[in-house]
Amino acid sequence: MNNRKASNEENNVLIHLENVWKIYQMGEVEFAALRGVDLQINKGDFVAVLGPSGSGKSTMMNLIGCLDLPSRGSICLDARDISRLGESDLAQIRGRKIGFIFQQFNLIPTLSVLENVMLPMEFQEVDNGVARQRALELLEMVGLKDRVYHMPSQLSGGQRQRVAIARSLAVDPDIILADEPTGNLDSKTGRYILDFLNELHTNEGKTIIVVTHDLDLIKYAEKVVYIKDGEIEKVEYT
Image 1: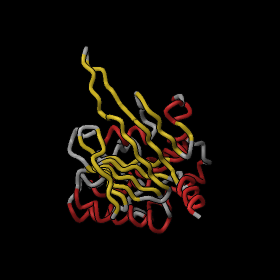
Image 2 (image 1 turned 180 degrees about the vertical axis):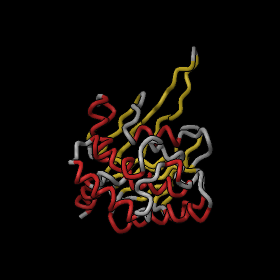
Image 3 (image 1 turned 45 degrees about the horizontal axis):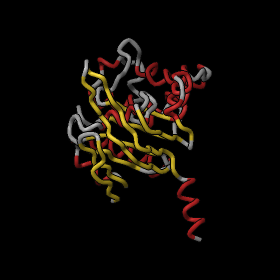
Image 4 (image 1 turned 90 degrees about the vertical axis):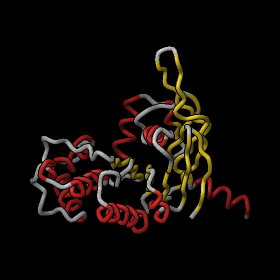
């Protein structure tokens, strides 16, 4: 029984960081943004990564999101060591398995709301008609069906973040990575965004990883990872 339980837990691991270091060369000086990080995230987890500015939170997110490679150690995603992959393979994983939500929204200013949400599907060569229908459905889901032809500059911060959420869901990814998703929003809009992420976790089984310094996020998370000076101080389960 114990062996079976251990096997089930092992099979449920989605992301595994083992002795991960990220070292930047700054002239003649080396700076370690991450120092020997070990972390497991299971399928369907809602994880909050908390720490002050400069703690290594965003560096960790970039590594988990296949946006960067570790200097040492390994990162396994679905039991595949992504730390050994080339950029082409990493781009494919990002495009198919991971949705990103950023503090600065990162919408393309010259594209409409609808076109921004369709963009990830175009990269995956989804049929244009299918992509358009999927984008319209997502924008209705986040309450923006009357803004589909607006440009990002015509939207409020909260509306732009909702577009970013719709875009992150475009290819139905397994993982949603959110870097300070409420950082530029008022408290009411921030709660809406967090409630929406929680619904994705609860109702659709998405794995949600939120990187933040906002302690209010703890009530949404099942696992809270505290990071400081590039090291994990502790992991709490709520």
